[in-house]
Amino acid sequence: NAGVTQTPKFQVLKTGQSMTLQCAQDMNHEYMSWYRQDPGMGLRLIHYSVGAGITDQGEVPNGYNVSRSTTEDFPLRLLSAAPSQTSVYFCASSYLGQVYEQYFGPGTRLTVT
Amino acid sequence: GDSVTQMEGPVTLSEEAFLTINCTYTATGYPSLFWYVQYPGEGLQLLLKATKADDKGSNKGFEATYRKETTSFHLEKGSVQVSDSAVYFCALYSGAGSYQLTFGKGTKLSVIP
Image (tube, each protein chain N blue to C red):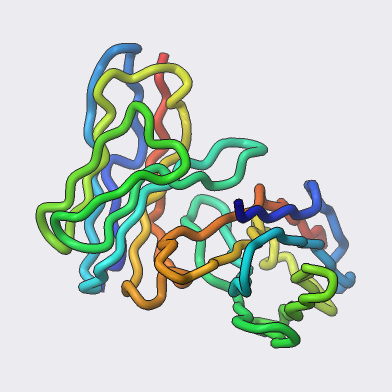
């Protein structure tokens, strides 16, 4: 089992560029989520999904889009990057009945200049 | 809404010292409580959990007791090791279809030989 994988590990963008952060899991988890981690702010939920075709907003969804066409994949799209989106992004997954026990990917460090 | 407050770091201890990281919470109803750990360069992983009042969660020598009367879930370890150096996050889950974990801001622990 690869668990939760994220690509890329590092990315530098210019303001206004768009990109997609990839996330995949091979544990057949129904629930998937995206967090951003900022110094002094802890983890904040961006978007989550409880199954293929179903997504919902978390605490800080503005500037980000998601879709869930398969159980395995949950990409996060930045439509027009801003310096405020400089952060470390984590994807996580879990069984729907065990959302408290999420398995995290290794993270993507994004810098927007 | 739900919130978690944990002690500010960083915390620096000598090997074999006693560790306490304080965590208090605000939530409606009866949440479940968790400690997650993030080792350098990695994603978070669940360390221990407690699902009801007076439960004690334990793992890898760490313990935390769910205290409803003081709304607290302090993390303790009797003798820390260099390998315990990490960031520790307290979290709560209200369940009941919320599908969201609420994290504290994290406490960085450094253990020196």
